[in-house]
Length: 368
Image (cartoon, rainbow, N blue to C red; front, side, top):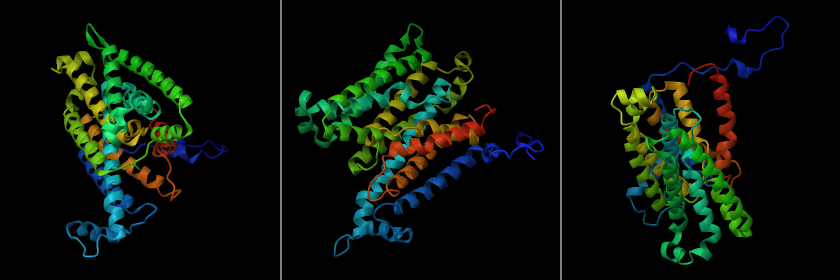
């Protein structure tokens, strides 16, 4: 019997969660293979879920139909799958991978398992810029919607996220280079300022603008369209290609900046690259889907608990697991109250927070 859950004679039975323990660590390649299979299974499951149900056995015929043009035009199932369901799946995959990768980069850079991409201000900056576009865009920038069309909100949010991240980076610059601790404090302050700005915008907004603002802040994959999917997927691929190359420098940085310098790592370059990659990935995702919280915090944690702190496995594993979590959450969000849809950000927080606390409890006493 596990001594941690042993009971004294006559004592009441211990709660079941006390018997839960973190499983033994898996080899990195085994974990990545398992996550890849889990991602494939999640894609197949999510493809069939929604207000218009698509049986799993019909998917091969639907995919095969992409290369042939039926004489009587596409069926209803083909229209739903290729124009609604498939872009949503690809967007969820790219969004989850980008958020998971960015979270792992930030936790490795700050050497803190509680670090989140939001610390560098990209989410709050994107939200504030989107809020300004929704509430004040018609007054301050009336020509912008006519010039950019439906891309106005996406480009404003993307620019806002990158702009605020750049501001925090400049605030953290000193004579000796970028100070990570100062960046953390600047991020907290700027996030608070962005929150106040969003509060003011909510006060000024009309009822219609307030509904648009709240829907965007709560996150959703419902606006998936192929042009936006291509943008997010392309930027996430670029961020992934660059970010995965930081695995060994981040492993050296985990020993401390002095040790990393002795090992030949350019700490300043690693910091700049990690921040730029995280800002690019999260900015692109947030601009398209709104704010989806907790993925960048939970996914790296779970991978680290399963495979250890080696960033060669944590970075790709977090991207894979982040994609799985977003796809599962979206499948639940669009089916549990169908034909309505739950906000994705609300669902990730409702499910993610208790699970995260359970992980922390199970890992108590272990070094993350």
